[in-house]
Image 1 (cartoon, helix red, strand yellow):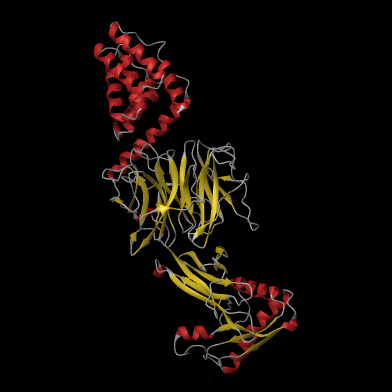
Image 2 (tube, one colour; image 1 turned 180 degrees about the vertical axis):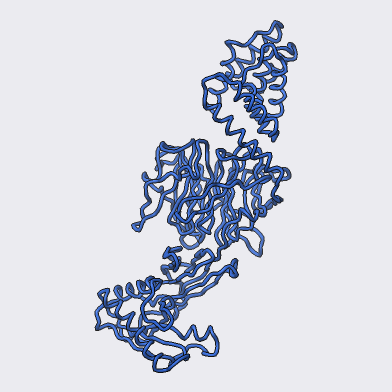
Length: 632
């Protein structure tokens, strides 16, 4: 506010030297009195006196200019535009080029792009001052006008729908976030000047009445601009003016423990700074945190930065996303979709409709973000559009706005996403891990690895009190899936996700078996080429889990078993199954497992677990497994 006031005073005073005085005494008196009210921030009173001044002297050009400036400051753009035009109509003296710039800004803020472009050009061509930033911004606004005039001719289908009274109230609701299964909505609400988090759960396709999230997270200070991990277990958020803060606003995280949230903690001095750090957005694998800051070293005023989590659980020194995303102006409200490949954010630097517009960018093969694309009109308008999040299935966008017919201040709305702006398709695995014998919930490490890229897409622990997990998997790849708990055989599975399975979530109830003689499991992520016994690279994830099991449980001995289907020569199948079992045996020996704890055997097609009459059955029979032979 202080900066805006100084700008206004400068704006008004820079013309006082050359501004003509009115020959009408009443007009001049009202004008002089208006100056005092502006210094006292009484802009309504100043506007009234300036209206009286121009009424008394319709040739008082500078009074019209100053009146327009006051209305522009108050965001009464139509009134500002009308008074700038009246000032320009007075040709003696000729209006300064700056008046055309201010007029064009008001036209831009009312969607009058054709006239705005014309007057920005008049300013650019006629300005003789030394303020190059104004010239630079005029050029930028001309690009906005060019973009907007084309965008308006090619509108996107847009029908915003209010989320209803369970979510929205007379107060301000904004910045919604969803879990990957779409069942939990967390958002910010400001009540009596205090910003807190609220949560709602979807039951039978309807949102339940939102309630405060947690008294461990909500405080007497402001909390806002949150990001929930896809599994709903981690909440990253902005906390301001806290005792443990490093700047005005810092980044915090809280972990969900059962049905309650733990006390949040500050992400520390490596991530946070003495500047403003806010608006976090966590990647679906939890390894990269994007956020907005005005810290030194950026490209513009507010930039998007990122920090990454290393294997030791420490966040790295933040890195600016660079000119691929950031401009010399402002970028804010980043959101990374659970597909991990689509970034949504707002900017007033890239060509748009004139204010903050929503853009999206796709991750490129080299790891960088592609050139941002404007999401289009009328989703973007001459007003400010920020804070978009996109539903897990990519079909809906959620945002906040003060649209006509709402419940009060800003409400949360949804709309159908344009096809071109939708993220890549994903699905997810949602499940519970239990003890096989007791059916009790287990705390287990669940890991999902992309077998093509070797990327770990999910690596976290289930809740000991609920056993629950939710892992997101983008379509178009094959994933190894494991669940590991101390004292138990691990669980192994894999998912081949092609586009036909988009939107079809997997629901699993996993029962882990305790380590005891006779316990056995199939290693579903051990891979060989057809009729070969050399271990393929994607097998490394499964082999590592088996290796870690034997390293942690040194009293356990196992027999590795190879199996085939019944196609082909029985003797050849017997030999192949033995060689494959030995390949796993050799890997474990090479990694320092005592040979006395290991044996291997090939069974060929003699122990099928499914019918060999079907393709799927034969695939199940071609397997590598192991059985615990003793626990000493």
